[in-house]
Image (cartoon, rainbow, N blue to C red; front, side, top):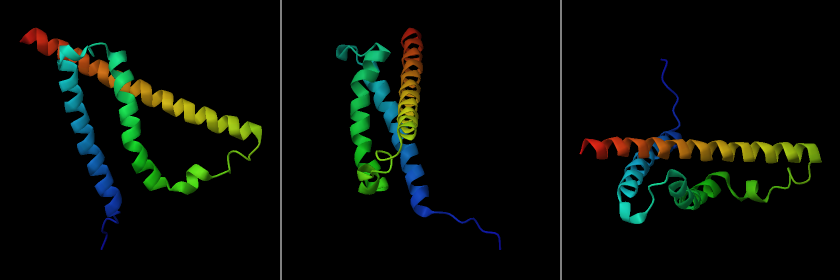
Length: 119
């Protein structure tokens, strides 16, 4: 029979990530609606929220990747060209993630503007 070979741990991680992403959107919208917090500017909102997001995912990343990755000297002992390439890839990925988050909150704040005008 042709069954699907599934990794249940991966399935649970994907479903959990989807649920937490929805929760993040709802909580972000609640924060953006509160004018008393002064977070109506998207860039300011990302500035305050990103460190919390990074700290909250750090234990999961360390648990999944393990201390071998953090303590690995493979990239430190490599030649300078490879080290610079790895540094570039990491910075480029971080920049793309930041811009994705910024665009998500920009979209969310624009939707709030339409909702406020409708009310």
